[in-house]
Image (cartoon, rainbow, N blue to C red; front, side, top):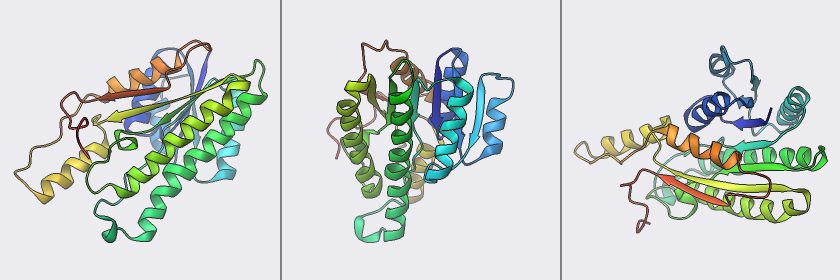
Length: 244
């Protein structure tokens, strides 16, 4: 049975992706701070492993990875998904502590998890595995007022490229999925902000989060000899090409 560890699994893209992996028969490690939501997700799924923890807590994440590998036998895939948007606005209206909070979760947290996954995949037998980082369309083109989020997601693209290069000798593949406007709590919050600023504004086009989740499972299911380096999956009519 293949194994996957998913961070940010209690809601949004992480939760939807966990459901898809469980339906496909994978052993799934569920990582997030909200243990009660993870337990609810894991109900009636014998292959689900609840691993509550904050991705920015390096010591706890080390325990989480060791516990999951101990139960699953190996780590085939990490879906490095946990992240947040943060406070929106022009840079001079963003408090330094709000910027640092986004960097802590979106960069430091993803670095911690990628580092642990890489270490386990390098040491296990047979060697290798796959790391899938959740980027964003903002890793390429920003939306207005997203300086903290966009900065963090550009950093993740650098992380993805470096892991792909450094993982080659150890059969560790790394890819990035850039998702645009899947119907999640984050996108609903962005739409609420748009309406608050202008009640007559047209809401952003969205897509079913299941479409994004199925794309992650596709990336994870590639044979070791193949890798989806970058995938963009988005609501068809959202302003991505030409925005920014």
